[in-house]
Amino acid sequence: MEIDILAKLNSLPLPQMASTLNITPLAEWLPAQSVPLIIAGPCSAETEEQVMETAFGLASIPQVKVFRAGIWKPRTRPGAFEGVGTKGLKWLQKVREQTGLLVTVEVAHPKHVQEALDHGIDILWIGARTVVNPFSVQEIGEAIGNREIPVMIKNPLNPDLKTWLGAIERLNRMGQTKLIAVHRGFSFFNRSPYRNAPMWEIPIELKRLYPELPILVDPSHICGNRELLHSTMQKALDLEMNGLMVEAHCNPSRALTDKNQQVTPAQLQEFVDKLIIRQESDNSGFSSKLEELRSEIDKLDEELIDILARRMNVIEEIGLYKKLNKITILQLKRWSQLTQDRIENGIRLGLSREFILKLLEDVHEEGIQRQIDVMNREDS
Ligand code: PEP
Ligand code: MN
Image (cartoon, rainbow, N blue to C red; front, side, top):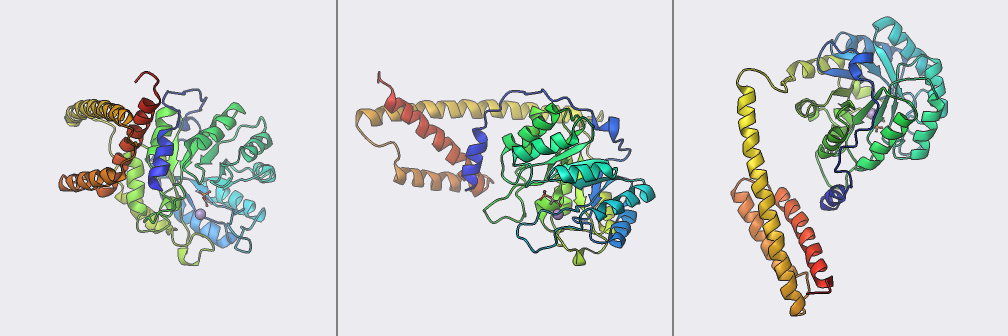
């Protein structure tokens, strides 16, 4: 399954820089004096007391600049707590007035947008279930109209960069320039310690395509538990993401939604204090060491690509031989022996079984395609 998803990702026709977004830099509308920028708050607003207690706890963490709370909750099955609805907007207004934090809510359709704007909400966010539907994104954009309001766009549930990009581009074309992407991980069928697989290659690719677009990471929905939260926050920073959106609750064990992943404001403070803020580069010899290592990587990559190209040439020769002798392309016995052998070899050299397998699958897939091309070629 993992291999299918990776193969799908690899086939994304997005190799070029598509830098056509018109983005107002984060620093122009959301000054973050302390790094990293953090948006925090409960998964759901439950009561006024819970909202205020959580907000006051969070307001004392210097990095927290924005308070989040869901008031309309997208629940998979009906009957679960679906949020307090409009009355929660008044609580958020109170948070704004009493703590000075900016406030943000999830909006899923035009009525939510209207009510949020009527209540002076500072930032809207579009959730993972809404972003998959271009009609919904269009309607949300139309409901905002020509007012300009920051919008955070979570990644869709499925690992589909194009859908995520599409929502961002759609809102941008509709005039919204204060946009932020939020990486919250992807639904996954394999067993994994994460609730939603991070698949970091997707936000990294988004960053490569649109370096001007800020990306926050939501480690709470990626992890689904508190144990992995800190390391995921650290990873987000090490990958040069622009900040974090973390779920925090004054009493997580009594939370009505997502209780396993929420932390208290005090726990969040501890996690933030433990974060290591690494520099992109500095002047203390680190840069030159880094340059040296990077040029080593460049050389190795060159060799790697050269070897892959040579391997494909040999594969084509094999394809030709099979064609002349009327042998089928896929030789399962040989493939399974080869895989076994390469995995053992890789493990001896400190590489994981999963990595070798993934790599071989991709190489094999390309090899089969080359052989099909040879078989179908008229002249050979
Ligand atoms: C949330 O942030 O509470 C939420 C519902 O997130 P997502 O849309 O990422 O599932
Ligand atoms: Mn949640």
